[in-house]
Image (cartoon, rainbow, N blue to C red; front, side):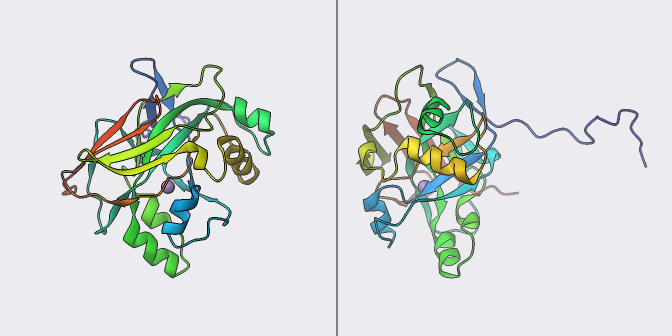
Length: 239
Ligand code: MN
C-alpha cells in the first residue's frame, strides 16, 4: 500500500469546481449548491395536475449538473420524455439562515436564464409511488444556465418576459410577475430550511408550456434583457 508523506494531500485529483461565466469575459461564479423551486407559476401548477394555491416546495440538483450555454446535452439515459423548463436563476454572494427580506435581497449577486431539464416520465413514476423526485430532476447536464448578469445595485425583477423556443418555435411564454412567490420570498423561505451560502444558485420555477425535446433540437431561452441561453440536444453518451 502506498503511503503519502503529506496527510493533507488529496489521494485522488479533486473534482473540478463547477462554475458559471459572468457576463462575457467578466470572470467565473463558483457553484456550491443548486436549489430549485417546484410549481411557482399558477398555470404550470395546474398543467401538472396541482392546485395553484399549493405552496411551492424545493429540491436540489448536484452542482456538477451545470450545462453552459452553447453546450450539448447528451440525451439522458432511462427516459423517453425529456422536458424543458425555462426559469429565472438567482446566484447568491451571501447567505445565512432565517434571512430577513432585506438580507435576502442583498444576498443576490446576479441573475441568469436557466433550464431545469426534467425526465418527466421518471418524475411521474416517482411522484405516483410517493418516492423522491431526484431521479427525474438531478441527472447529469440537467442544469442549463446562461452567463450571469450581476445585479449591480438594481432591485430584483418583479416582471419581465420569460420564454423558451425549440427550433425557433415558441413553446413557453410567460411573465415573471406571475411567479406565485417572488424572488425575495423564495430566498427567505429557502433560508428557513437550509443555511444559504455564497455560491448557491436558485432556479425559481417555470411558467406553463413545458414539453418534450428530442435529439437534434436547438433550445433557446430568454428573460427580458438577460443573456440568452442556447443549448442543443445531442446523442446519448455511449460509455
Ligand atoms: Mn423547474
